[in-house]
Image (cartoon, rainbow, N blue to C red; front, side, top):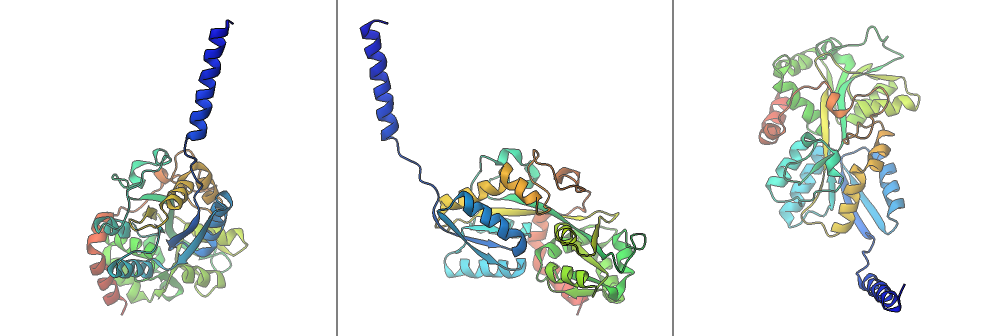
Length: 332
């Protein structure tokens, strides 16, 4: 190598080193992340702790509430001038449609979103499903033999006062189920009228219903798959049935608020949830993953394989108050 060529290489390397040293260093996310969710705490806490291990500079402040109470809080904060949450994750897809319409969400397209099917994310990039779960029929295996357990939503009604469900006035999952049933001509409002006539009991939330199933207070419930699966894994005498007509599938959205005061941490949190690693962690909690490259929990379908009742989330957002009012009239 001649001296001139060697000097040229040295100068080039020196210039590259100067450029690297002069480039801004991207800081790790830090500070407090305000996270509002309707996820049950025993499901969300392990996920939050894992995120905080990955990003030790971030402290996640979790506010847990039922979906309807969470919705009321968000509207109240918006009315007062600013939604305090950085990230919202709830079970009611209609809530995110309304928040987007009212300018309360920030547009963010995660680099991980490409692995998520289009039907699980907002086409404009304002929200994306972080998990999928279903509502079907749960039964207590000590009180009900498998062959006697209801296999359809219509058979569920025969259990009358021995059956329970969560109220759509408090539970986002039950509100989605209400909209799905009303949209199905084989179920409709007639199903709820018959449930009321037969004495099916309405409890507050899905957690209340699941606890009542485990204790044996009610041998049959409208239950959520991941809750029942977790209880069964802990040794509870419970099992889940996907009804013949179809389950109620919930694509649970996740979004960053337009008023977020810690956008960097909010983006990192959303990215983690829908990353391959985050979705694999959620599978250990018996959630159906939103990514096509992550396998579901044993015995559960992928998101695209779920046999579900149809529901129009946009319609659900438009007529939500009327649906809740009619339900209240039936079960007064």
